[in-house]
Image (cartoon, rainbow, N blue to C red; front, side, top):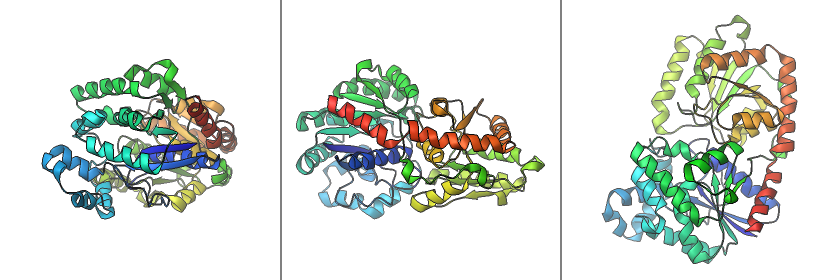
Length: 426
């Protein structure tokens, strides 16, 4: 089967769970004998991607932003587009403040959802023509529902089924002003009619998205995220030093401040003098001042030397990170549709300590491997850490459970087979 995966890139400036999810599914689908082509939008994917050299980045972030704001750019010669979509310019865009935030981008989001009726219709035709000429797909898979504006033209020109994943669209939409938010959800519901099947990453998010977009039940499928256990060496966490990990973009929304404040509370107890905290996952320009505030807070509490901010988060950097931490927490303020960092940690034998929000209870209750706490406050998180750090036998038990949970429930190869079953039905 020839499969096209259309994936919005993060530019490699921070740990992008959606990008990682899609890339892992692509690798697994290829291992099952299928031909899969990743087509990036807006920005490149991770900086360590080596199989995209011949594939252009469509809807270049700077180019479509300028075309949306200034109509004169829509008539600019081709060399202007090539300049704006060049690697140096893409790298600049990836690190720009707000380049991954919906605030101020309401009109562009709406225009993208309008597809062939929006301001980016020329970019849409360019992408569809390129796919038709170079790929001859059997199915097209959109990374998220914010890309639903692509579906109608693709079905018309390519005459193939279009599938769409559902994951964390609300994170983008909910920061918009109320009038735009309502319009976007309505548009996604309308454009959902152009899609043959929706793949939710958790039962929790399937129910939530169905309500927001008024999706028909027969189009909804749940395929959990996963990782390949073979890619993650296992060692029981009880044998490691007492080090707590965090892996996600470092910002307020992902709970970085909750994490830091909880660690400050933890370190007030003498019996946790040896405990360290490691944070990785990167950031964008708009996160710089926030991170400075967190570091200053640590200095004021005289524990800055116990907290380590990792610069790298891809490839070997992430492998080394997962080899050393004993527990992992990413206290996302509003929860998440899944959180692939959890399966990465669990496959490595790291128990997870997460708030009772979003799909986190669904993941940890599937077969153990972690603790759920509530409410999502520094005090509750610190108490959950203390409970485990005071009980090495419980850490040993949860570490074994975490690995088995991935092997039995979150193996990417098993999930990829479920995805192929959906494709084949279409």
